[in-house]
Length: 268
Length: 268
Image 1 (cartoon, chains in turn orange, purple):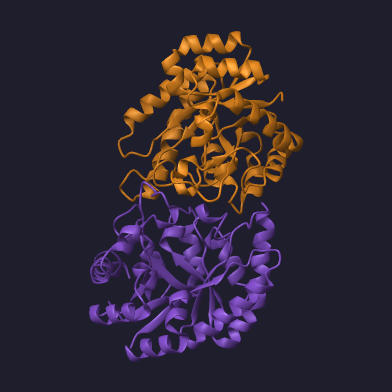
Image 2: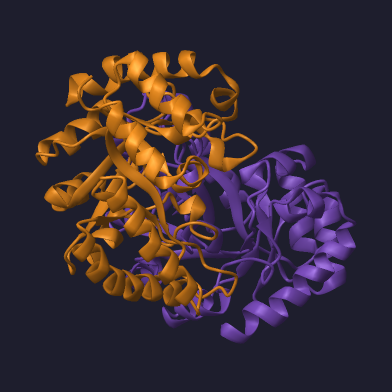
């Protein structure tokens, strides 16, 4: 289980302290953090509690939301996010780049993302943080992420220092080009995240994620593709699911470790 | 309004007779039919009522669901659908090819679709019917359609006689390659369908469609791309939406004609 990371969003109701404690008790050595609960606990306090527990921070989520025509405030906020990642001693800031922003101009939104990443990459490089562009499932194109494929994310990442990509199984599994784009990504894979696609899609499409193995994604195959690139980083289990959020933290972390062991680890 | 076609699913509660009557009263000259209500009304009776009203049948929906490992029954049903299209005097059978079918084998499912279309294309050519492969938004990859991009559909369509593609705005708008793939499609575009992508996605993701102009899709741009290929066929307005299904048929058809006139027709 040396490479399992618990993404904090999987136990969304937990505080930073509860999440760190849960990882320690279940032998999970790495954690993926989110800015809001980190701010609630305090940035420096979070850095200390994580370090005292001997945990790695596999990533900080999230920067992004850069698609507005006037994105100056967003750029400032992203620089703060980069600083926070550095303070937490993670080299990976997950970037959810933002949706169409209400003006139907998808091409313009994608261009604004490319321009903003070019600008932010300089700051990120100075901080020793990689901007990990997360291609989002196209169901989120309107409201969350206009980068819809790994190919698009790589087109940007390849042009700059300190920019990589996230391979999140849920977002990329449907893509007919996923094999070749994972191979193309190679060392640009900054994070590999797993969960599963549930059918039917629940009432809130954002929450249609299940434990690895419970859905339609061939995670064995996808994980082998990622491993074949030489990716040696942590594997985050990140699940947004109302029933899992309502469950006991310990039960959830226990199930995460079992699924990681059964479904993911054999393919690494 | 010479090229507007009302897809029958937009007024789902209407019988064939009510839909045909509505088209006639609103000056809509073409209709897209679905197999189930056609069967309810009777195939020959439907062919006659449509012809007596002077309507074109822009398409019949739907064949497909070919992804099961044993798809012999599905192949038989698709041959019946081809016969029905011919009886209704439409040359376009919309194909929703089917989902992953519960075994996580997306690559296998896609191969079975390609093989089945190769087999069915011979029968379709003899009947004078084009199998119009509909790439489906990736949110439907698990349960409805494993062809997720226009590029994939064209890879199959280009290899056979009597196979084309559907460009449905809802399914393709997010695709970063949509411009080049529409241009590639050229005369293989068998049907162009419009509606709009609503945000937030409603509880049933299948019903997240709005009137053209009400959502996030740049329909003017997309329609110009389709028109630039020389596409001269009907434009179907096909909307799955609980509120529109609950509304008065006449109001809905009236709104469809206004939106077509305002949003679509100027770009043709």
